Length: 112
Image 1 (cartoon, rainbow, N blue to C red):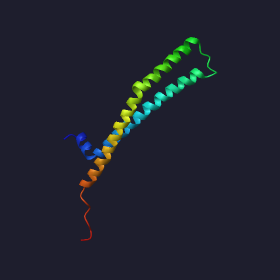
Image 2: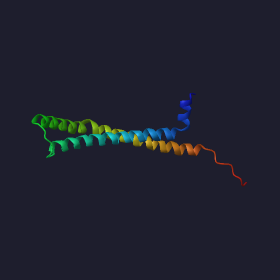
Image 3: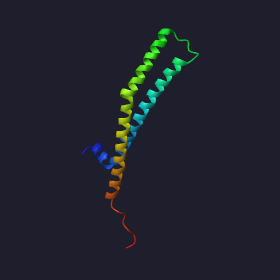
Image 4: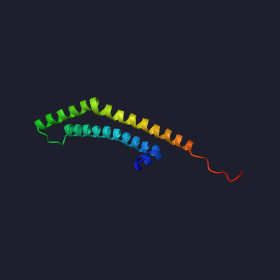
């Protein structure tokens, strides 16, 4: 058995924990990024201090509408799926850790 497979078998709970954590953080990161882009566009568009030309306003409105639609169609479902799968993997890692703890032999007793 290769050293990588041996490592995964011995530390299955840890490996799955990190995979789950990365999936959850990726899902949250996608959601936060899309929200920040939309808020940035709204601030630029409705800021009284921005000197935008009519073409720049139209471009910004089109981009804002695109981001809002794509958030509904693609980014929100993607982030929800990543978070859900991450939670399932995280739960599995805890169950694997409990199962692995049950397999260990109890320490030898000093008192007999």
